[in-house]
Structures are given as structure tokens and as C-alpha cells.
Length: 351
Image 1 (cartoon, one colour):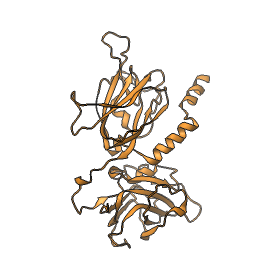
Image 2 (cartoon, one colour; image 1 turned 90 degrees about the vertical axis):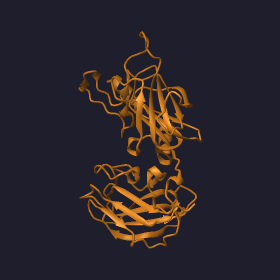
Image 3 (cartoon, helix red, strand yellow; image 1 turned 180 degrees about the horizontal axis):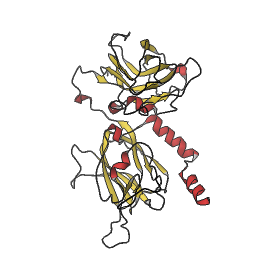
Image 4 (cartoon, helix red, strand yellow; image 1 turned 90 degrees about the horizontal axis):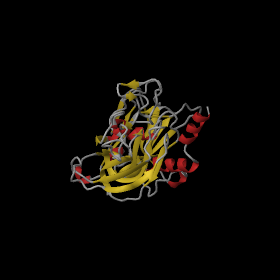
């Protein structure tokens, strides 16, 4: 019992670490997540557990009785034992293509459930490459070899202003890592868009951020601006049941200041728990801090409008602002509560 309690205590973030995690998740997005197109390209060894697990949603899980023909099934990336053996390596590595190229601000190197098989140290390098990295690629160290704890989230803040395309995670000397998060800010090449093309300014891949919500009891605020349609009811933004008229709301920073020409509100998979109505407002703000409700003046973009279950709703004629009026942020309000799978805000970039 004491051993279990020790591991639980080790896996719990300190107050300082919890504050850092909150800061990271509030201000940055996971550039490497498989949900935004992140991909593991190659690794030195993944004998026990596949490298692809590194970028999966959620923290790693543990199934006590589950084994494979190679040994214990683990939900992460795990190499074979190499240290101290003939022809053994002194490290293992994995190369990852970021789903969103951008500036790296933090790492979460999570060894959840890797207790007797976690690495001692990790390092991270990064590169800028239009093709898959090869022997000629020049790598730049962004995190020097640093101690990590077993069965724990290991959080590291990074100061670097280069927009990277790939990272290489190295663990010393071998072992397993459950999840790897590369938090940062998207760097978008606006020249990739055709002049006059409507851009989804609320897309996480284009640099939008979900900043603040009234409630996200059942699912994360960032689901609202993820690529594609929701895969299930858990892949959206859903609030708990209110016992007052509401509303619940979500504030999203647009990828760039821009107009609002077309809006899509998707209630995919929300059948018995979709909102009755919604309203969309916008503002122009030079701050992302909306904890004080008086810091912004919100302009109605789409007034209170009926929603329906499990449906993609397209709005153009319902938009009541001038098509050229720019906004930096939008606020989606849902009455009285419920779930929205995705929100798309298409417009023209203004500066």
C-alpha cells in the first residue's frame, strides 16, 4: 500500500508545476498532436511499444493483464534494453514532424506508468526542413539533456523564437515515454493562401487559440477549433448541465485580425445535449486576458439563433455586421448549456 501511495504522490503535480501546466495549456497549443497532423517519422528502436503512441490524445493508460508476444503492453514509446550490453546504444531517439510549424514554448514529457523502465534523462533538438530529415539535417538543441522523473509529467519551459518544423526526442540511455507534447505558437505562412480566399480564422492549425470558457466539464475547450468533424461526443466542447438560463460561452482568439463572412456551427454527435440557441459576438482587443469581463466591448455578429441536433449549421445571411469589419476575438455563447462539436469562422485577413 505504501508503494502505491508513493507512486501516486510522485505522479501528482506540485502547486508550482500545476500553475505551469495551466499557463502552458491556456496560452499555447500542442504543435505535435496527431489531431493537428503531427507524425512520428522514425526512431532508433520501439521494440516494446510503438513510437506512434507518443502523440496520442490523453495520458498513457495501464492494463495490468495485457501482454504482447514481445512482452508487457505499454501505452507509449518503449525501446528494448540496450544499456550495458554488447553493441548497446547510449540513447534512443524519435523524430517527429510537427502538425503545426511554430515557435516552441514548452514540453510535457510524460512517463505515466513507466515506473521501472523510464529513462534517466531526455533532450530535444529541432530543425527546419521542407523534407523528411536525413543524415544531412542540421539539428539545434532546444532542451539540453535533463533529468526526468518516472511515472510523472515532466514540464519544461523553452525560450526560443525560431519556427521549427521537426523535433527529435532523445532518451538516455533507453526506456519508455508515454506521451510527448510540444506546446507553442503556430507560425502561418499567409502567402500559402490565395488572395481573396476565405480563411478559417478560428482553426487551431491557422493559429487560433481557445482562450477562456465558462465551463468545460465534459471535454476540452480546444476541441471546438480542431481540424475535421468530431469523431464522437467526447470530441467537442461540452458543458455540464446548468440550473439557470445561462449562457455558457467560449472565447477564441482568431488566427489573425479579420472579417467574418461565413460561420459554421457543428453539433455533430450532440443529439440529446445540443444547445437550444447560440449567439456569436466579436471584439477588437490587444490583450488575451478576458478574466475581467469589462476589458472588451462585444459586438453581435450573429444574434440568438436556433440550433438542431447532430447537424452542421451554415450561416451567412444571419451575419449582421459589415463584411469588412475586422475582429481579433470571437465569443460563442450557447443557451442554456450543452455541446458544440466545431466552430468555423471564415473571413478575410485584415493585416
